[in-house]
Length: 291
Ligand code: ZEM
Image (tube, rainbow, N blue to C red; front, side):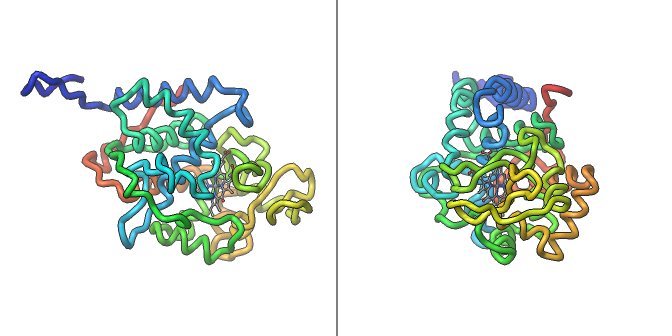
């Protein structure tokens, strides 16, 4: 829609339909890339949205998805962000096709699209993030370290404002994608269907037997039965810690509960630290390609 004729310039004010077009464009691109990894950029694109958001610190109200500061060297080079250039590069042609969208809205919209297109729950979206300069880069160390234990998980996610239930729900994203030795040092997928959003991560965590993988890499777990799946030390904490475990058991049994809690928590995650104009009760719910 075009309006605002006060000067000779026309100001483009994007609306739901315009964001849906960006969504559709990303969905189409996700489909077109079957030579990458398990056949989809969906998981790595979701990881980009998560790492953009997961730097938030509620005490100082710094970090979070507003700013897209991972574009810049200090933050882009943080160890935790290794490999995410693949996702940023994947989205560059989308930015070129829709130059009016900010990188910071685009990365989150792409995360929403990835979840929905991989058959996950609907993730309502608000626009309004602005791109900020290099001075807004967050210090290294704000994202979780997979080699650590429950106290680290609670410190990192507590800093963002999440409780145990949300920490477990969000971790269910590990149904998707895989670890890459040349990125994190870890190796392998968590589930047998790494491009479909399911509660399988919790079912496998609870139902399978896990043992240390014998290899030269960092400490990680493999399933005893097939040795083809993996869990990180932080993943195993979700069944070892009593409070975490009650939610892991709930989500293993009840896919609807998982979808609902994941959606609620990821909407919160994606909005941390963003000063929106668009009200909470007017979020956009995008149509998926298969709706
Ligand atoms: Zn992840 N994650 N993550 N995560 N993650 C990896 C991959 C993916 C942790 C972590 O260290 C790692 C959340 C929470 C936590 C995804 C989404 C979300 C990898 C492998 C590691 C090491 C990276 C690689 O080698 O490519 C830790 C310690 C977490 C919390 C304690 C949350 C929350 C997520 C989203 C809501 C996704 C989708 C992937 C798969 C990426 C891919 O390229 O396949």
